[in-house]
Structures are given as structure tokens and as C-alpha cells.
Length: 604
Image 1 (cartoon, rainbow, N blue to C red):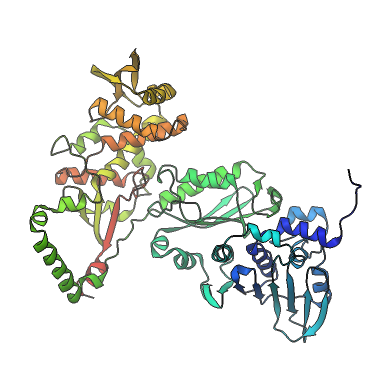
Image 2 (image 1 turned 120 degrees about the horizontal axis):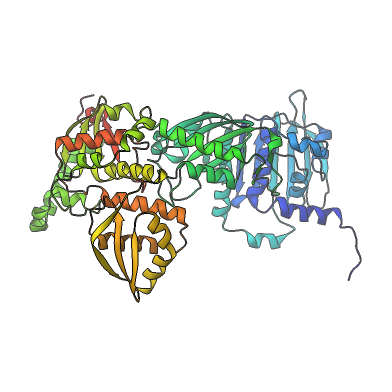
């Protein structure tokens, strides 16, 4: 065993750099945080070869004196704290003293800086061997840091990096996040001299989110503002009509510092529990202004992950966000493209259509509007031409309970809509004060039934219907495993099974209201549960069961409805808590404004 000895300063700094500087984006993050703490109004980042060959960060902040810049490259030097107790009241983005010395230990660095009151600035150059050069220089107020040949003296670290394009993408991503936490600051990113990010002149979250994610995201935004224990929350999130297949659009900030928190993430997902399907996530920018003493920012060296010392705060946030989603619902607009209605386009599209007809006339003749819609909807035949929607309302007494809770939350436009017809026996057409409303009848009633079942389950009054003739079920080995795993929760939901022999069961009861054949409903439910591979918890099972049941109880596409039935469905939908999406997350309703229609017909 070797003797204990002290590491030389360069080696110690390189080890420290491994904790702080993992790749080029780490350099950008540290330097941008320093720039923001310096009060900058504009940050320009320039990169070459993914930041490995050259990385330059320029700000117009308060700058540094000659003495400060000399100290800044030394280990544990910082202007943010003086004693350990200062960490509990820390308001700045950075506090560690490893950032600049860690960078200078693995790259060639040049710093140009000047304070507002100074007649000239200071230029400092340093490389891994700490051969420091300091001289006066003419430069603008603020600080410019040029990092060249990153990891020039630690080539092994380069092996863990990916392509230049990927490393550049990470830098773009971190600047996007900084712009969302500090919308008042202009950010500019140049890659190989070409502009790839520019927020100059964009000073608020809605415009930034539209800039990054498009008009559909901006259209679905609602503002969040409220009080929490020990602080407040502000920001924006999207209604369920806009969602993504990953969590990359979820942004949490505490005191303008981007953070990761399992508690906050769960609180957000809980708020969307009954309006977004599993695997779909919202877009949000939420900033919590909290007393630094109630959060722990030292969970990880990167300062990204935090812990909340108040366990009730996340729950409060979830309830608040849920209320926002209910109160601020707005029907999404469907935008018509007037270009498609121009005479030239009409002639061109008509020519293509006629060409298609002539080449395949028999097939085209046999197609109707309903078959076109089948490309988008999985239509199921209805047992009868008419579905007694009004009877469903009579069978359930909880609609009045739901209405009392959400009377003020429904979109006033929806309550004033007047039914004018049915399209392809699938969509209800209604006229409102500002345009045409198109409602998918199947998923609209699916939402109505789901909330009713949810209310009944919460009060323990889900009704079970005993079958007049028990149905014999013959299960595969996998199906039986699913049944045995979930047999108690299924019984709690009104499905009564009796063992009848090897992999054979008698189905004796189902929840009331199921209009499918009992065995069809049960086998489709089993298939749904099998997809979870037995990983679903009992609580998730109950939710999935209610979703599945509401889908099976709802009217199908291609079902003719009377005006009275359509009006009843629209009335019931207006009383639900969340009338924008079905429990699977599909949109229920769109509106086309009169203005859009007038534009399409060139009347305005």
C-alpha cells in the first residue's frame, strides 16, 4: 500500500473538473450562470466543433476588476458565499468555487472583462499548466470568456463524448432552458458562425413557448398563479389538448434556477391524471419562488436535483394545478388554410381527383364519406341505429353532483351552443356565438360516463349486475395469471368470477351499464390488462378499468342520433369537469371561428 500524499494543484483541479465539466455543455452552463448572476441583459454563445475546438460566452453584466479576475481562477474562490450558513439563504445560481479553475485546468482560456466605472478592462490568459498572463485591454463592459481546445490535456475524456451535432444540441437545450427561466434576458447561439437560437426581443413565456414549440402549444397555454406554503408559483402549462410523448417539455424552476424534483414531477402528473393518457405529458414552465431554507440544493454536484423540506408543498401544487386546468378550459381552434381554397389549388386538386377517378373509378365510386373517416377512427358497429342517451342520464343520479362542482368551470361557449346537425353519424355539429363546433359523439359521451363512474367509485356505489345466465370462460395460461393477480380488485369493481375447472371460470356479474356481450367485454379487458405485463398496481387497475368501461358503454361512431339526444349529450358534456379530452387523451371538440370561415371564402 502506497503512502498518503497530497495531490498537486493541477491534478486536484482536473479531478474537480470531472465533477463539474463533463462535456462542453457543462462549460456553457457554468459560464451562463455566472453571467446571469452578474446582471446581464444579453448573452451570446459561439461554438465550433460542438464546443470542443472553441466555445465563447459574452455577456454585458457587471464585469470584474483585475483583482477579482485573478482570484476567480483559484480553487474555492467565490463571490456568492462567505460561510456555510450562507448556503441556506443562497439566491444566486452558482456558489461553488470550482467552475473557472476546473475549466482552466482542462482547456486554454482567455478572459476579457471590464467594470462599468473602469476606463479599460483586463485580459487574462491561462492554460492547464497555470501559466497565467494578465494585462490591460480595451473591451466592452461585461465579460467575455473564450474556451479553446477543451480536454486538450485529458484526451481520455473525449472518448465519452458523442458527435459534434449531439454536443451542440445539448448546448442549444440548456440555453433554451435558461431563456425560459430568464425571459427578460436575450440569448443568441451561433454554431460555426450560423445562428441557431435567438430570443432577442422575445420577453415573455407565451411568445417564447410559441417560438420554440409552435402555435398549437401557445394556443393551449393557460397561466398559473397562486400561493403555496412558504412561497408562490407562477408560470404556464398546456391544457390536455396539447401533449407530448416525453417529459422534455416539462420545466421546473425554483427561484429561477432550473431543477429536477421527483416530488414536483409527481405533483404535475397527478394534476393531469384523469385528462391525459399514460405516456403523454404536458408542456409547462413553472417557477416556484420559495424561501431557500426549505429546499436542499446540494443533493447532486450539478445542483440540478433538489429536495423539498416541506412534504405538503408538492401536494398543494398538484391541487392548485388541477384547479387551473378545470377553471381555464378553452376549446381548441381548428385553423383553416385559405390557400387550399384558392382557385388555382382547386383546379389542380380537382384535376388530380379526376385522374384518380379515371384510373380507379369503381373503387372511388364505392367510397363514401364514412369510409374516409374510418381512416382516422376505429369505428365499431352499434347494436341499434339509435342509442338512448337520455336513458343513460336517467340511469345515473350523479350528474347533478358533477354539475354542482363544475358549474362555473364549463366553457360558456359550450353551454350556449345550438345543435344544427350530425356529420357522418359520428360528429355533432353545433353553432356557437363565435363559430362552428365539431364534437366527437363517442368520446364526448365517454368523458361523461367516465366522470360519472369516477364519482360513483369514489362514493363506493358502483353497481354490479348479476347475469341471468353465467358465461363460461376458457382462459389461456397467461390470461389466468392476469385473472389471479387482479381477482380481488376486479371483484371490487363488480366483476364476479367463479372457478369452474382447469383454466375455466364462470363469469357471474359485470358492472351495470355494459352493453357489450359479457364475454366480449371481459376478454377485451383481459387483453388490456395483459399489455401491462402484470406491472399495474391495484389503483392503476381501477382507473384503467373505469376508462375501459366508459369506452365500452359510450355510443359508437356511425350511430344516428336525434336532435334531442345530441342536445342532451352536449348538455351533459358541458357539466363535466374536463370536457376537452376523453380519458384516453383524444380531443373531444374543436371550433372553427367565423373569422376563419370568412377568410377561407375570401369574405374578409
